[in-house]
Image (cartoon, rainbow, N blue to C red):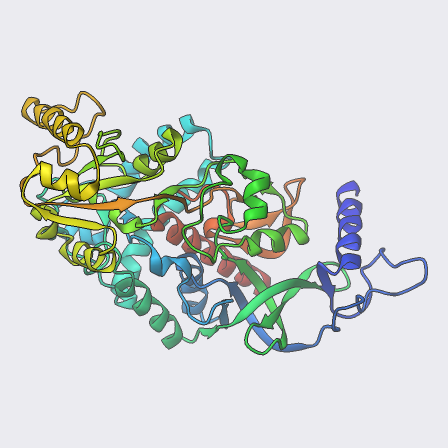
Length: 496
């Protein structure tokens, strides 16, 4: 009873503020002293449903698209809405590295190990970090990543780079990449959204979600949108609603409140504004792990992951090596923490001609203002980079000694501990913040919960609107997939 009253009191305040809108009469038990005043809020147009759907997914990044798969395949009416004029969200801009185990693609390439076996090894590491409140949910996401990869290839025509391109080079075979390698997310996302539309899903662009709509009992039954092109209001009625709006790294107010330690870093994009977080809170949702550091990345994010697939040496503005080069987030983390301002990635023809040649060429052309080389000597390279030549030559002498010894005694680099050969090239990077890890607390079935842990009917969350969905795309995809399954299960249960 206390929980019910608390929720009614909360909704009464939300309705009065206009954060939540009501369709029809006042919330049961929450009428004002003056009578039934729940129909309208000053400054807000009354609710008039223009559209109706079974499943409404807000956000068309990889999490939102993946959440649509099971509902549309089960025959439900699915609508995906996005505030931008294009689908895909920030997933289109991502590096495309997907950590997946036991997929059919890996099996075809002769890579052994099932996803269940990998989870048994990964779970203790996750528990030790202490960043996860629900290990069952994390397991479902982990297993879901593999199912997702198999299904988007087999059922939607998504294209991945053959593992033969890099499996014998020393690169991690636990990573799947889109067809042309790093950065080619078109090869995965375009077939997925086309397939969803072919199966009956509707995609609505330029729609910014502004309010939840509740019925007279306070149950969520829809969402209000505003068309960003016309300012037209569109009220959509839905049986189930999924928040897949991404993180909050671009919302400076939220970052300053929850992650003040990263407030001075620039965001890598401009779209992750935390709208889904704020919508979820407006209906009684609560935050978890909001103070977790966001991922730091280079402003040349795709270049940051080259170290998984080829040799490079990364140095400070003074030409000193300061980090191992085979972990994508370590370098921008160290750059920011050491106050370096920027750093350089030095590489040679092995990367230019290797498995990620498409991406290397693209970034070299796109960032000619940051690129130096080709340089035939370290002296020439140091001059082009404007670093002390004696520092750079000392750095390479030390690094080459580690290569000869077969062990990086300074930083523990494992992948591509190899000497670079002239001609040399270098690209300059700056540290930015990227993917936030805090989000709306959910139940194991992805349903939004209140501060008592009670599910908020009809509202689900996936991807970066939830706490700690990892550092690459695959947990967002797995999170979306299992959310879609939960939505189908709930709809079918209600129909039974």
